[in-house]
Image (cartoon, rainbow, N blue to C red; front, top):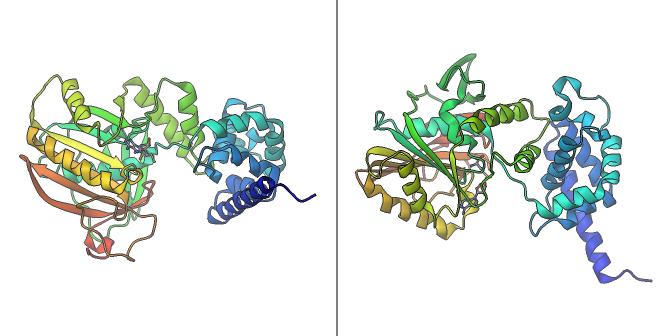
Length: 387
Ligand SMILES: C[S@@+](CC[C@H](N)C(=O)[O-])C[C@H]1O[C@@H](n2cnc3c(N)ncnc32)[C@H](O)[C@@H]1O
């Protein structure tokens, strides 16, 4: 009997999913665990089909990988757990081929994985992005170094980047590290400085308040939500999970205010709330330091311009307003655009729009960086010129 059309469509969809896993294994061949799992899934229709239950637009390899990671974080007794550095520690990871254990774990926990896949979306709050956030905030404050800064993050997730000044941020160049932030911090972020010229002075301003705005903020008191955030990290990137856990411990003890809302519609109310938190309703002496990192890119293009207009509206209430952005190429309206072709496709462009005493000053693009802060390159030469 010929297959039902829906069966044929489903099989074709599973074939696409398997091809996505094969591509992931090729693209991330340097990740031993995730490469082996993805090669296994590329060859296992039954396991790959779990992604059919994902919400629309979410059936990506990273969702199944995160669901599995979440499962072993909850159930360290499962056979797959011994392959995860996040569960057994980097020294305890088994050697050989993880796929037989992972396949057995998937088969025995299909319903559990299906539930996670059907209800979750991947979520990030990458602590090492503090490398470029620290640089951006320091550069935006250069002309107003002594004004106390009120920090507002748009698309803050769990708000871990709002503690940027409490981390030790190291910028490495030829064996020497320039340190920004708190040198004694247990949270260490690092990136390579690939700037063609010397770095400018990078001093962070004094921060007097921190508020994060997100469509779906992650409550640091919610164990399940925090575990999911951790599960979305890739366990075989050395140091990434450890850094996340250290930041979590620090930020939980003194968390920023997180607000649920849209970064365009709720911007003004968030700024007001941030100001009220400082015990003042008057920002005329302060620096409103707004930043977004890999968040504006999720907002529709026409809404992005509206965000800039709303910032211009609040600019009249502060001595200084800066909007520091670390977003993909061409994402931020009003920012000069580096010459096409000069940058890697996944480059993050660091720049800012700024208002001083209510008037906008020329926008600046400072450089480019790795999307997780693994390197940074400042200066026009690093951008290949401006269009
Ligand atoms: C990729 S995460 C980046 C999180 C964090 N900025 C970082 O760099 O680690 C993007 C975040 O933006 C949030 N987001 C997307 N659209 C938004 C909007 N219109 N308003 C507020 N937050 C939004 C998402 O919920 C998510 O937490």
